[in-house]
Image (cartoon, rainbow, N blue to C red; front, top):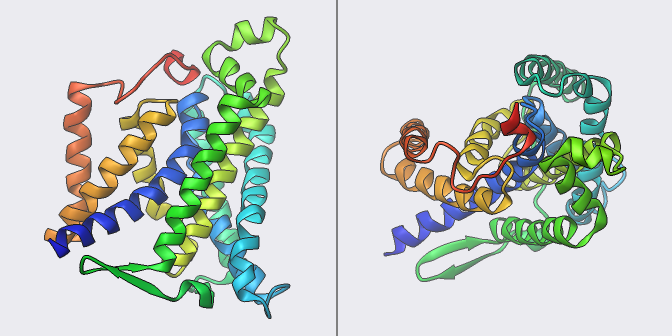
Length: 297
C-alpha cells in the first residue's frame, strides 16, 4: 500500500510539471497550430532564473529568490515567446512544418547561448530552508518541495481559468482561436491577440522551469527532457482543450511513474508512447477536441 501511494505521489508530481508545460503548449501548438520546438528552451530559461537571482541580486536572500523567480520567469519566458512570434513565426501561420524547422533551429541557438553564459555543467538551485522539510503520511514521504510544486500548479491553473473565462483578453483569445477570419472582420486585433497568446503560453513554460529547478539540477538540456512528453499530453488531451490537457497530464504522468518504478525509466517512457499510440487509434482527436486553427490547417 505504501509503495502504491508513493508511486502515485511521484506520478502526480510529474504530472503537475507536464501540466504546466502542456498548458503553455496547448496555447501555441493546440490553439495556434505552431509546432514550437523552442518551448523546451523557455523552460530552460525559467529554470535558470532562480539560479541567477540566488547568485546575484538575492544572494543573501536565497529563500526569497524562489518566490521572486516565479513572476520573473513568467515575464522572461513570455517575452522570449513574443520576440520569437513577432520576428519569425507570424510569417509562418498555416505552415506547421516550417515552424517546426525554424523553432528547432532557434532551440539549438538558445541552448548554445545558455552554454556560453552558464557553461555546460549542470547548476543547482539552493532549496530554501522553508522547503527542506518533509511530512510522512501513510508511510509515504511528502517532501515540501514537491508539495510546493503542486501548490504552484494549482494556483497557475486557477489563474489561467480566470484569465480565459472571466477577462476580456481571454475571451478575445478564444474567439481568434476558434474562427480567426470572423474575429478579424468583427474588429478584433488578431495580431495583438497572437502576441498575447504566445506571451501566455511561453510564460507558463517559464513557471514550469522554476518548478523543475526545485526538483533537481538544471542545465541546457532541462527543457528537452520535458518537451516531448508535453507534446504527447497536448495531443492526447485534444488540441486546444485545457480540460483534456489536465486529464492527459495526470494519466500519462501516473502511468510513467508506475511503469518506471516496476522496470526502468526507458521502459517507462516506452510504455507511455505505446499507450498514446493505442489511445489515438481509438480517439484520433484526443480526449476532448474542437475545431481550432491547429486542426484547420
